[in-house]
Length: 409
Image 1: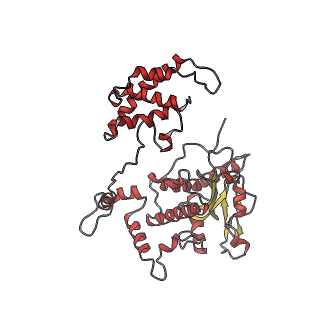
Image 2 (image 1 turned 45 degrees about the vertical axis):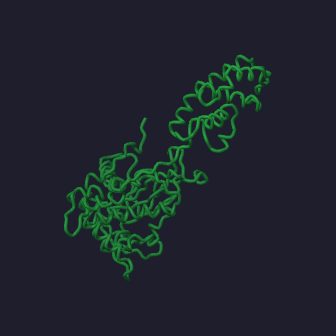
Image 3 (image 1 turned 135 degrees about the vertical axis):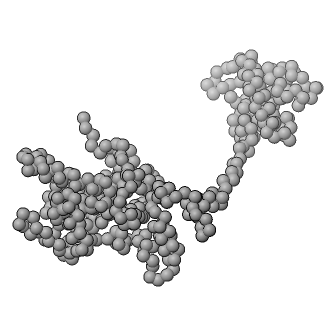
């Protein structure tokens, strides 16, 4: 409600006198101030409806009751402020929005709240962390090795080796482990293409574990939610079935969960077939530089191995897919063996997300290059931990997705 300047001055004195009698002089009684306000003409509101004098004074008295408690709180917070100085701007803010108090950034409830400084003891917390898990030359760490493995997802031996190599980065050539964290496709021994010796060992491993001679690895894709994806990119990265936009990761892994190939950054609106056409998985075969490792099945010799894939992948000789319908006992047995062997890639995704919570939850980075560096760093660390622990997987590192990938009616 807006009133003229004379109304504002009279009502301010009236409210101040009612809330703080000591702040007003004895020569200006409340009755005289009430008569001054009542003598004016009815006040016009926005809808141009006349308001009676008694109703206008009643509303002002109600505001006096609420403002009295507000000014008491204000004076308790600022004992040095006088009551007459508090009444003017605060009451003017109630009568007419945009008055002097609001222009100064104040409020009717009291002064503007300032930020509180909290001493968080960061230096002491860092020292406690070192004492608990790392120790020094004189003292042993407080917690044993298994607690360190549970917290950092790797042994203290591997952690210290990586740390020491990174601290000595100025040495040329670069240390072994430090060079693997560079943003490139071929990351040393921990993210590279298999050699002829590696392929032969993979043949023997899968024939022993799954009974499939000539099997290389399994191939599949997963999605990583991108929470802070820019709105302009939602059309490329978001599916109607997902809450957030996603980025796709193509992975090739063997039975030991070692990741031989990773291709990341494709918008989530694509499918596995689109990712395959853009990846570098078969560049060596196309350039005819891939190592030849023949194997024999039922008296037939094949020059190169094959990957296990699901139904969306093309019918190439390098992909072996399952039967959609098993018509006899022979196809039923192959279907069971193929589907059981393909669980290697699902286990690799579960362990990768179980070890690193940053890729288990929606990504918060704004740039795709940042997300790529995070993903490749987690994959390289995953392979380093496998080698350090002799390819034994801790059950605490396995992530079980609570939402199934297949929705059944």
